Image (cartoon, rainbow, N blue to C red; front, side):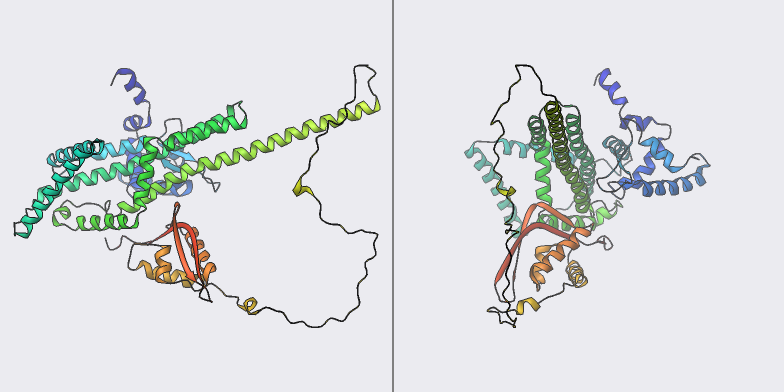
Length: 486
């Protein structure tokens, strides 16, 4: 690292946070408010209330060192290009929200890494490096015979281990290795969650560049959209975009989620791990990833929303300009009619008006207004239809509370269930109306996840026994208090 690079880093939020006079206050509060509960953002009133309580307790301990209102501190921390907090207005609502910047989270995580650990594990890191080197070499190998040879060698090693276990070989168990690998797993999990704010910030920078192009570009609408969509495709197909897409597909697999949760719960119950007094990071790891990943997806989707608004605004401006031109032509025509020019060069052109034939612009049939309508005077009698009208009286009511009860019953045996699993356990009795009510419950539930990129098929039978099916986004219902038994 050279002098110029260090001078640039010194002006960024992470370095400025570490050298700030009130760094202990800022770091301790932001860690307690954002990182410990894995909160992605707060409304301004809620975060100001938390800081006000924190300052009250802190001033009682150390004297009245921070007498200013909580809102003043938040505004200072969110001011400037390299702020510690990001203050923004959400898509819905008029109250600003606060979120950590990636640099601030990196600084706090770096300070956390300075804590003295029970011991420093070196073997697990070496084994991880060795394992990753082997995986990279195997993945990059394009020779079919060489890859088959590697797989055969691994197969022989596994079969040899299975034979020794069947023969009664004692299973070695090293408590130190368990502790060492647990600390490494915990460190990697924290780093992964912290990386999400950087990924979200990258998508946000793309959104910002697109808005700047919209505001300053003189290109036509088609050329400008080509540039914007090209940039969006570039980040989606970049290494970071591909990696995030693969991560989200992996995380949305119910079987892998269940495996991750089972292994995490089993790990924290080991006596060697309990001796380290771990927090609930790994137990809540899956849900923290889902919360962080969902916020990244919403940030990415906001780019499409801004482009839609741009198209609507651009079309409105173009229509307004066209109407202004038409008005000016009409005014010029009126002026010429009252005082036609006497210049011999002025000529009239015939047949220059374009002929338009708009199918949807044709008017409806209008009977001749002068024709006198004659109505036959007949007596009206009650008729008999040639179809069954019972269906008109089969009006049913979908009880939303009953559906919520079914969801709670399904969630007593699992931490999360998909809508497909719920409908399999409790078949739909009222068809599409009941299915739409489930979707309405998921839309109103903050803990539910609606994955637009995945699809699920739900089938049911109507009153006549006919099979029906609907294809819709995957819906996942999550138990609200899932950590009480951890």
